[in-house]
Amino acid sequence: MHLAPRNPFHALRHRSFRIFFAGQFVSLVGTWMQVVAQGWLVLELTDSPFYVGLVSALGALPILFLTLWGGVVADRVHRRRALIILQSLMLADALALGILTATGTVTLHWVMLIAAIHGTSTAFEVPIRQAFIMEMVGREDLMNAIALNSSNFNLTRIVGPAIAGAMIAVAGVTPCFFLNAASFLAAIGSLAAMPGEDRPAGLMTGTILATFKEGLDYVWGREEPRALLLMTAVFSVFGFSFVPMLPVLARDVLGTGAVGYGFLMTSVGIGASAGALAMASWGHRFQPYRVIRAAGVGFGIALGIAAISRSWGIAAAAVGLAGFSMILNNVSSNGRLQTCAPDHLRGRVMGFYVMMVLGVSPLGALQAGWVSEHLGVPASLGVGAVACVAAVYLLSPAMRTEEPGVGGGVPLEAASN
Image 1 (spheres, helix red, strand yellow):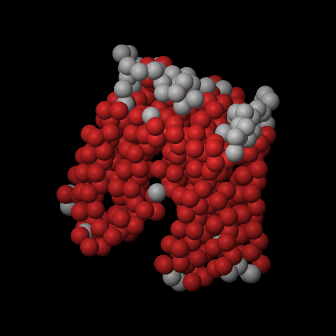
Image 2: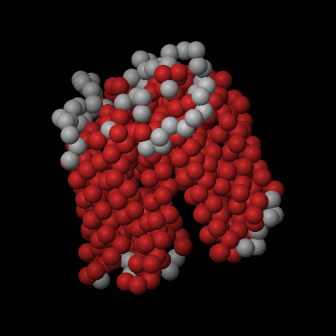
Image 3: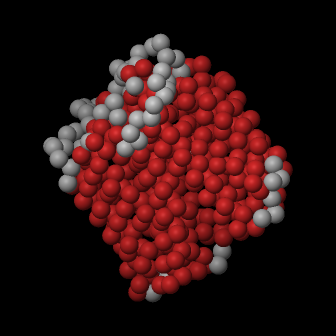
């Protein structure tokens, strides 16, 4: 095995993905600006942390309940056209918030309604967008493209909130909503500018329920996708839920306050960005199942260190390693699921994957909060560490290298070279 790194931007040689990548970067900066501004707006309107959480939940719940149907739609429609329509709806959401705040007519009920509508659009947009990546880059560059998408997400998670914070301090929340609406024009324009003819994802002749059942039979009836999705769910509920507990860890365990919390979050972001870059550069050199196993164990070890540490420096390094391992795991699982899925089922497979990553995350935050409240944050991190390592031990044997890709995909060797 040659360990020389590949050009980390290799997937950008595809013109369609290059345009898509640039548009998504601009759009994601705007999205993160709106996330910050919306939370601040609700706090100003209600002075209630409960309503801040409620509005966030209203945006997340549609992802839990509708993403599977978003995967069904992804396999029945022209994906590029569907993305243009859905991102236009998201533009309208942001524009509506901007107009309401600019005119002084905004109320909590309007914010709640718009958050629910935006969450519904997201439930359909994300699985369609994930499945669309293969159309732009093909199997050979899929893992690199997923890693670059992840780097986009993590970089904009740093840039967007920083811009929003400065903007709110100077001009209030209204410009953040208008700028997010404008940022969607970049994403929509990039999709419209792609060369080539749009084509339907597949020839679906059955009912919606029959289409859904076909996807369910595939992911639950075959050992490898079932194991990957179950492992992803365990990591989302018990592992990745460490992030919402970082302010409590900083204040009550490490005694560092808001400044320490900021550094812990930065450490997670740096680790995640490094993980995305590592996958973009070296991911093609390793079998995905090996990366998933190593990253899963590494993530559990990192959480364990953070649980027992009382040193800010060690804790920061540990959560940075957790962020690094988290991205390695997500990119490898996503890529493996897509490369082993038949083309006509890819959207539905991505619907299940997105539900396991994003849809169940509120459940993870709830369990982490409950354990932290009753047993302390170190116990919550310890539970996550044990659960993640146990999931790797119990489920990773299903990830074999000698079998061809499940259901008409490609072998693991072909997916990783």
